[in-house]
Amino acid sequence: MTAKVIDGKAFAANVRGQVATHVARLKADHGIQPGLAVVLVGEDPASKVYVKNKHASTIEVGMNSFEHRLPAETGEAELLALIDQLNADPAVHGILVQLPLPGHLNSELVINRIDPAKDVDGFHISNVGLLGTGQKSMVPCTPLGCLMMLRDHHGKLAGLNAVVVGRSNIVGKPMAQLLLGDSCTVTIAHSRTKDLAEVCRRADILVAAVGRPEMITGDMVRPGATVIDVGINRIERDGKAKLVGDVHYESAAVVAGAITPVPGGVGPMTIACLLANTLTACCRANGLAEPEGLTA
Ligand code: NDP
Image 1 (cartoon, rainbow, N blue to C red):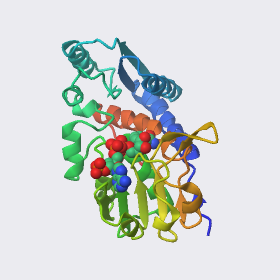
Image 2 (cartoon, rainbow, N blue to C red):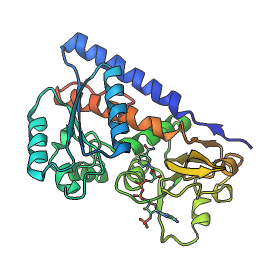
Image 3 (spheres, protein in one colour):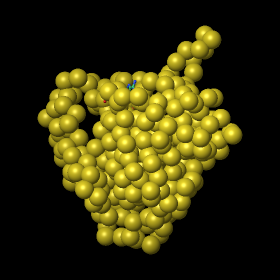
Image 4 (cartoon, rainbow, N blue to C red):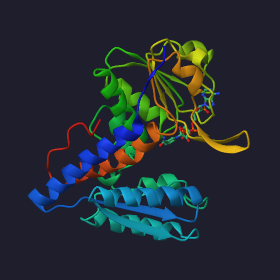
């Protein structure tokens, strides 16, 4: 068996297209333009690339993009004051503080200062609580992207056995909550799980969010399962830099029914879902119907 490749790049382009259509309609019918503010503190090279890509994608779908670049030595009070200002600005519907923040800043304090209704990363403690209790919330972008691809591939997810490997607050835990919300039977595995291979082999849906290159191998995959590889790992092989996932693609793809590649799987969906979340936040702020198919 060779797995169907779930093309995240094409899927993300489609999501961005849907967002752009909604944005155009919001402008034409209501004179509203959704706006996303991104705050970057410091000079982390990877963060600078992410922020640049977010800015370009935001403009491309017709939204306003507000970039705030602050020096690495910015104090807590100054950063919190900026967030207060963005919270109060009616042109800003989504706020994202690029993580990681420099060591002297308390990320939790900063994230929890964002108005939960504008928290398009879904990291505010209120959104975490709302998701955990099955209420309407802002959902973290990466797991939302995974959910969209899974719904598209399977139709209904109810009753399927899902195993999420990884229990981080940004991927593993919200992913598990979303799958539970769609009535999967969910197992969360982590570094202390006993016999991980056996646990993984129970999965109809296997989500790998481990941060360890190619750790999930084909012998851990149930024949016909859907494998979602969240991992982004930069390795060197044969003297060349290479991007690989948390799944060993070659061995998993001959067993799985469907699989996301790295690159070109989950990665592109993350920014697409950030734009979808900004649109959703804008619709909610203006008492308008939420875009269908772009929320959890
Ligand atoms: P974290 O490092 O925060 O969490 C990793 C999780 O994996 C932890 O829960 C850890 O368990 C678990 N784990 C580590 N080693 C093992 C092991 N040997 N067996 C079982 N479980 C293990 O990572 P993130 O969740 O932030 O990210 C996961 C991956 O996803 C990374 O590769 C990251 O780059 C990628 N990523 C991709 C995104 C995208 O846009 N596609 C966005 C965000 C992340 P424990 O809790 O017990 O330590």
